[in-house]
Amino acid sequence: MREIQTKAQKLRDLKKRLKELEEVKLKEALAKYGQAYQESTSNWNENAAWELADEEVSVLRAMITGIKTEIKNLKHPPSPAPTNDPPSGENSK
View 1: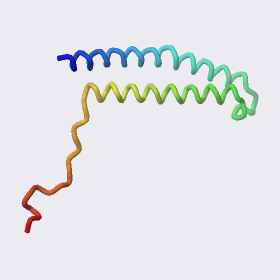
View 2: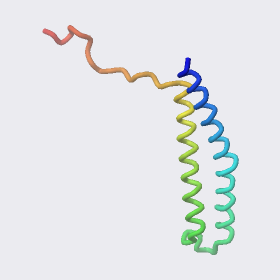
View 3: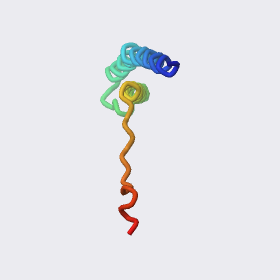
């Protein structure tokens, strides 16, 4: 029973973290990204502020993807992979 509570608590914590990342951190990072892009000249690809904002957005998106995967795996644990071992007795000739 303790394992179920732990799993439920972990799901709540992950969902809370996901919400914070998506609704706060990512929005802030995208705002910085947009601001850096607007403030840049035609050499936007050489703009250090834009590059930092772009990297931050990429990191946040990777974190969000990781949390979503973890939530999915907690809700629906992956089944064990089938083995390619032949049943016993087939190769005993």
